[in-house]
Length: 287
Image 1: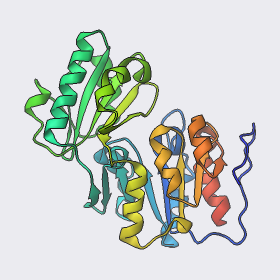
Image 2 (image 1 turned 90 degrees about the horizontal axis):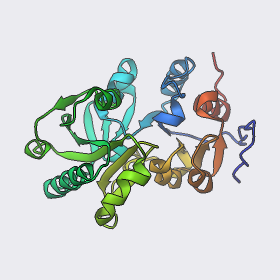
Image 3 (image 1 turned 45 degrees about the vertical axis):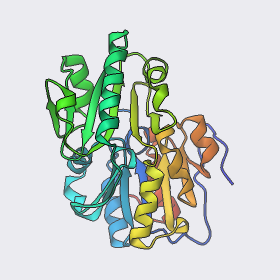
Image 4 (image 1 turned 45 degrees about the horizontal axis):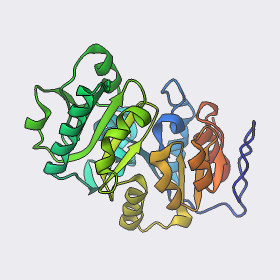
């Protein structure tokens, strides 16, 4: 039974200890604190998980190469769910992917250009398997994009570089992704997955692409069931994750829809909630 959201969140106790084989955690607002940093206790915890043959997978709207850079020292022991689940990688090999068609990617770029002409202050990122591409390059926009894309190319015309496999179209909206950009994408709502992933970011994936589907692909590939899976999330692009794990946690700081969908609540991202919950549930001493 989910715990109520309290000022101080109590981590649930399970008896017997669950036989967890896969742990999946969103990054921003979940595994990372508000300074975008990992807690120092994360690294020894992951080493303990490795010794127990438990797979750990960061699941993010971020680029695969950005996640790879973040976890470079332990990358071979992890699984990466990138671009909101449209790409899953293990030890440099693709486990699954779900790409936009070229025609749909082009249509989205044209639509978002039209939105900019009508006053939307945002920038488009075409997220390919090999790199991310932008044509807006002013310092304010570049600063927001560069932190999330380890491989990023500035090009003159996005429509002329969509020969990479396109995993996602992302938009950074300086005002509000939900209230400014989203209304311009109503024509894609039935055919694609259009997700407001934070106050300023909006992502467009294929209709079938989400983090939950990526987890299901991992579970199938490694013979792991929902009863052996833990998942942690905080925002709307984490909703489907909550359905794939018997031990599905919304962070204390999560969007209300996550609290409604999750089975349990973990302490907030600024309270080292993911690490503390894993350690408590699996009886792993923290350094």
